[in-house]
Amino acid sequence: MNLINAVRRECIFTNIQSSDKDSFLKQIAELATSKIPALQALSPQRIYQLFAERESMGTTGFGKGIAIPHCRLPEFDDFVIGIARIPQGLDFDSIDGQPVDLVFFIVGSEYQSDNYVRLLSSLAQLARNQEILKRIREASTPQEIYQVITGYCAETGTTSASQPQSEPDIEKRLLFTCVIQSEDCFLPLLRSLMAVPLCEFCTFEGANAENFLARTPLFAAFWKDESHDFCKILLGSIPERHQKNLIRYIEEITGPLEERDDVLLAMWPVTFLAGGLVT
View (cartoon, rainbow, N blue to C red):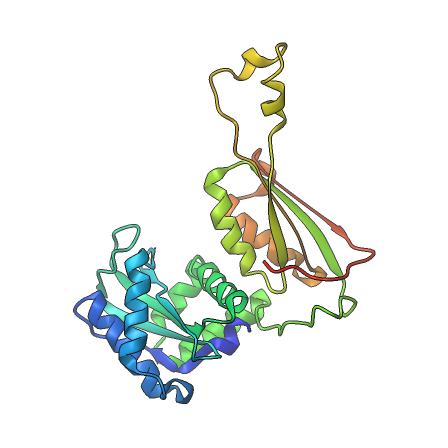
């Protein structure tokens, strides 16, 4: 499942009027079930309740005017992404305290966690692209918004359908390792990598060399008053054609990698690759 297949043009709304977050969630639940045939068998109240339950766990107000409410249902085996503009803005308990004027919402399957996480990550990645957000906010019609999304997906490579994992020789892949010593970067980088098409990776706990040196009498005094404990390692593979996407997504979080001394990225070609990873 990729982003453009999940975005439904029938669920793009340019002028939602709601007085508060709760009424907004009820409104989009009603609109989604009325517009999407596959959702018409479901109760709007049930979808609203699932949206509300997710919000009770922590706001989906992403910051900078964006929110991404989402819910999963066991009786639904597909994904629907809708887009709603709220011209007057709405208090969404966002992490930055700012009102929300642009919402991407997801109704998805409880039994397709990998696809669900990838779609969430793709939306989170899109929500950091200020030029795309500007064009969505300025679009006059739902069709124009849909065209902005399709253009974004074509540019970033997120229109590609997944290739079967049992056929690793369909296209060339690269192995990559990303070593992260910045705790502030780690979770945003995980979310970004989930948005890279056909990217598979896993994480390892690492340890900085100074942690070992600090335990030896000769070097102990050098790091006596500081903690240098954070070190995570990401190991994975991507299609060779998405190499630039991987670098771009990472540098959107870190800034230019050549200017960092706490994030290291390395990639190399694969001579043999079989199997796959559940991210």
